[in-house]
Image (cartoon, rainbow, N blue to C red; front, side, top):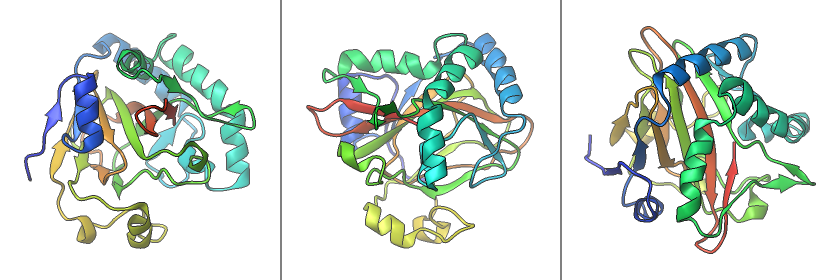
Length: 259
């Protein structure tokens, strides 16, 4: 694997380097305690016992994500109708008031003067954050998170940055894989595998340039507009994360937060 750089703290300089592609990710240590992780994991298992995800039997999610919202008019309506309630469940039921994603947002505010805004449509705010539970065998093919979609297009987002906080990790697998190579959204759509497959095949992207396997309590911010994947979960345990996106629309624009 090619050695590509990361940063170990969120600053104006590290976020600028991430936007410019000079580093691959910003890493956080000890964002949430082991006791908080254990309590949150129990709550997540109870809340996701009967839930499912549109494109994977190995992934459960609290609420409707923005990816699913593009799938049908019915899913879009659920996304907009349930976003506020889902965010409240994540904060209050899973994390007891303030989520790890909220803690990252608070660290971001002093370094981004235009502020952070939650997008809305027809007066209804987007979902702000999700909790994902990857079970045994669950993973994600190499993919890009697109900005030029019907829901996001009005906000002129140029880059999407993923925020992942790790609540539980299995003893094997579950790492995030990154590639240096970039694709335009048009190139990605032309190369993306047809359903039921998802994302880019390894024949297209090859082996990852970097693999990061955070521990429970840690977090990363990364450029989700570049290829990334989730290594399949293996061994004992599950991969439970609190996640969100930040959309960058220019230096003078607010960051848009959604999930």
